[in-house]
Length: 220
Image (tube, rainbow, N blue to C red; front, side):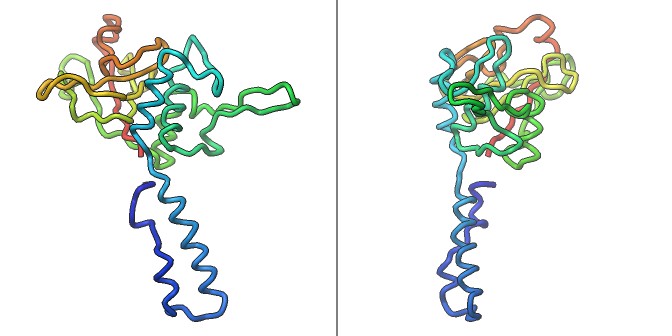
């Protein structure tokens, strides 16, 4: 994990004459200075929440593409990038200029498609599924009425049919209500909504209310 203190190497332990071999100590010190910088890039849930709330209703078209017919995962990726998740060759979205005036968007499926983002976060070590809920009749894990233990900066992946393939992504952004009846809220695109109840129940069809499965993904 990015904020795992065990990855931090203090270079003063390498300057006490414990490794006197010529040239070796300096090489090790360089490693000690580089690795902590990589390990200390911490994920900021509050920055993710701030970005998602800012651009939930007014997409950030100056920096990213926007697809009115299906922008949920693109928006979620933007939000966690704002929170500190670093782009890679397998997860990115940027302008690829082919003339001084023209460009096309270079976007990976892991950035823009819900199943691919969910998979990439797990395989890259940037997140894991911490909770699963199901609306199906007889399910032993229905979504809770109150959800104070869901945290801002997490992602909610929704599988509308409950068939094991996620279809939609939203970003947990705020908690509202009073003690004992706290409600977690999300921001999302397609449809564009800001700080609405995380289950999205008020906006569901009858079939979605009967079948949806939720995957809460802890981003780190």
